[in-house]
Length: 562
Ligand code: ATP
Ligand code: MG
Ligand code: MG
Ligand code: MG
Image (cartoon, rainbow, N blue to C red; front, top):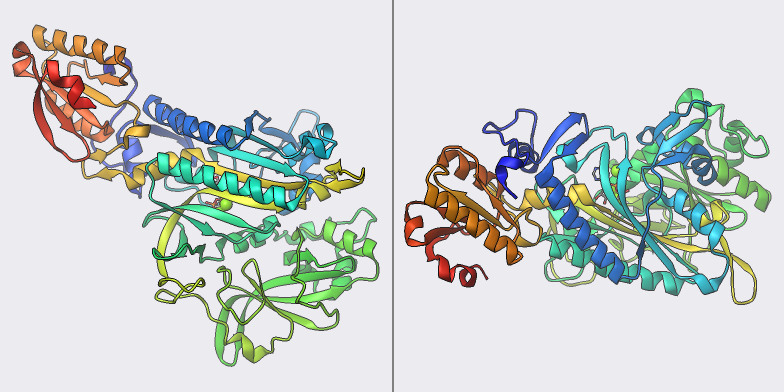
């Protein structure tokens, strides 16, 4: 590509409103421009990199056995009402009305859409497992869009969903996806950790986040280089989801069950206040028992404990009543599998502590980071440890280190959270209808682009890893008015293009200082400068990463480039 024909509006100054390196560099190197808060145009260079990341993602998804499709971003509210998320997702879901006054959402994620698609088409266990993915623009009205495209309100995501007839099959599918994610992020040149995450209000069991290590990351992770163990320390996902389940006071009265039960009636079933009822996270324990979690700060034996989830198990009169309560309370997150060794006693309080790290306390029962101890007395709370730097980790190998991470990917065993709510069933080998068992898997494609820049830059600009650089070689004729320099540069450009290199030729009539500065900013791996020695057939090669430079005779150039 000739630079004179490309749209690369570089900037000399650091834009005042850009706080982090990747945001500054993406603006300065002419990769993005903001339209409005959290909404960006990707200019040609960024677009090229996005396509490369997408290509890597596609190859790895296909390899993992998933096939690509494209679903609508515009989704009717009915789908979200079926799953209950129309009420629980909160203001992050972009909502709109059509001309007939019907409610719609712009897809923030596609569990509902894909569940409805698959339930209508797949009826037999013989068609399972099935894995589908798409690469698409997502919309989330983030409270604090920031750091450029790292947290946008419109962003590009790869989202995949898998459907299974057995838990073993889900485990297999999950492992394949997990490996595909490791490949994707390694191929993108990222230093990352896969960490145990909290399943928050999504329901489901196993979940891992892929965290790019970076000072500006919004998550804190605990990991050890000498062990496999890595986890997200923060309760952020749980709290965030929990806060999403907050419903405005004036909305409270509107919540009614299919049988027209009011929130009052439900709060009286649960024996909690109306408000607590709505703000709680509910889990189905079994047909008649519901576990109610409500977050708060507690003072125990003069020790202040933050973000403690207090919990109680509530017995409801009938199985139908259980269903009804769960279906109408915004915080319902799907069934929980309480491990067998925990006997649930209806009239006894259950103490629950979540500290975001699975298995932090070995003496107690754990369920995905939730410590369930039926007999916990108040005094025992204080004994529960929160994981700290320097601790031995849960698998006994190595010491825990903390680091900040940018979440670029997330894999999740959803279980039957959506298939039950939306009645997506298949007939098993005995002809019995069973809910499909699901997994979901997301990659922030546009966030990954910024995360790569965050990890690969120096004081002069971006330093692209070769795999995803927008071009591999930057040819710079020092003086385009000089015939032999211009011609040599042009010839070289055509020759390298023919040989399959991706080449950017800076044919602009600019001072060489400007060209070099832009070239460093854009950060292509190899720069070839065509200067005074053009007549002798000699050019200068400079490697962006190491800064190493050397003169090369044109005859030896291709050999040197490999
Ligand atoms: P976060 O914790 O950063 O808000 P999330 O957990 O809400 O992310 P997921 O629902 O897991 O996000 O979505 C899958 C992936 O989409 C995330 O791992 C992330 O890489 C990306 N993503 C999520 N929100 C945004 C956003 N606002 N801008 C850019 N990418 C995003
Ligand atoms: Mg989020
Ligand atoms: Mg998250
Ligand atoms: Mg996530």
